Image 1 (tube, rainbow, N blue to C red):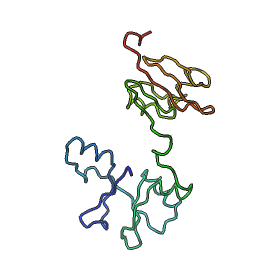
Image 2: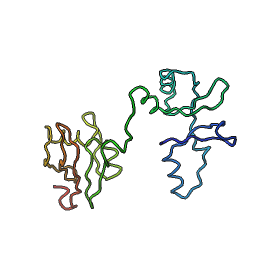
Image 3: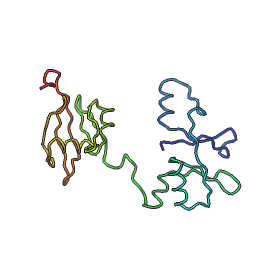
Image 4: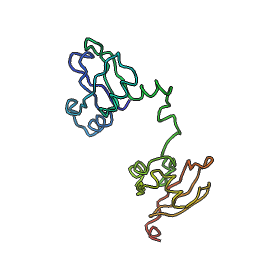
Length: 189
């Protein structure tokens, strides 16, 4: 779970809100004592009698992914997430880790990257400086745009100081790309 419920001194019957797991871990790893009340985000309360569609509409209206469910007396019943709602409609969804294996695999100074990854995530984790445009948001989209055709396994190109080699294609979809930083002397060529 990426959001953790925050409860008060009275325990489970006093839900205060939620904290983002990443923010909490960031504080802990920095050696800081996290101020949970300061980090807390407000959660909405939904009646247990709400239908899934009522709950979905309320959560969309409030722009939240988590809600506390309460009964007619205001007692805390449980937590409802947007994933819970989607699974009740579409069936069990796979965890992000089950979808396609590791997104980015470091191989020394190089990276084998999923073509479906958003360019901003790749930039954060590898230093590859591509930015999304109106034409593409993913690494696969960038490669297709630069080649101006559907890529094949083995296709290779140079772009802004990096060598990009397509190492995996399934049907018309680029699944894996090898990113190699060019040595400084040849990066400008």
